[in-house]
Amino acid sequence: MPDKLSEVYREVSPYSYALGNPVKFIDKDGNFIVDKNGRIIASPIMQNGNLKIAELNGAQYAAFTIKTNKGTEIEAWRIIGQGDYKRTPEQGYNFDMSSNCYGFVLTDGQFYLPIYETTSSQKAGNELLEQILREEGIMVNYNGDGNVQMAKGNIFADGFLMTTKGRKKDAMHIFKKKNSVWEADHGYYGVYSGWDFNRAATKDGNYLNQFSFWSYQDNREQKQYKGISIDLTPLKGLTKDDFLTKVIEAVNKILQ
Image (cartoon, rainbow, N blue to C red; front, top):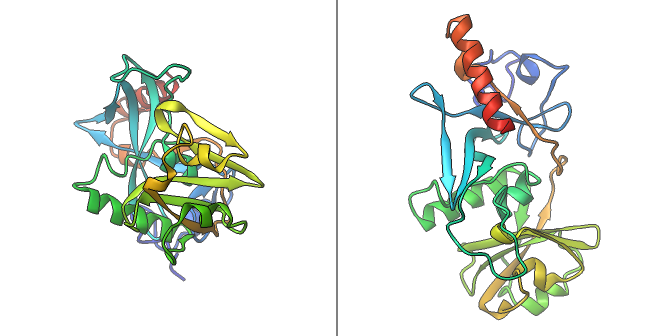
């Protein structure tokens, strides 16, 4: 029978289980498509024959496309270098632009997910994030008023989506719980891991009353990823020499 993911990877035969390679690839519901080692399969985004390079606040990224098992394409950035910072870090902090909070929760920090940088508006970004969370099996509970004290007392939550006060779909931040420890990526200010809910919500643990907190349940089977795999399908059709050249260029950019 046709693979249920035939519309996700159109370049593969619709009768091919696990992208035609059941040894290497695994189909799982509710996760980004991964290989047998839990590495997200990523397709390089090519522009004018070159791998797309994105820049943000002094950091350089190689741009890839990753897909949910529902077929939603998401642009994902893999850091390849850090130039001059566009902002000055506060005392006691070091910039870390390798990921952001969305990439930290959704890809275990393997990518920076530019959900709001690559959409046309805040509303479009909110809608895309909501769709990704739903398709990845991260079920957000929007009941109640998002009170921070109620959130801190919720022992059953796998994490929280943090929004502007009183605005349920205006996402500002997302963080998670691993065992009994809160984990969060604050972008410039790196990753927090510890017992303090406040520090997971904001880098300094202050001003929590300005936000609303919505608990989520993470129903994904695969929650931790181990690097990336590169899908070179977009390079097919090139001559052997051109293909090898593009492969070397892509690998070198990632390993810089």
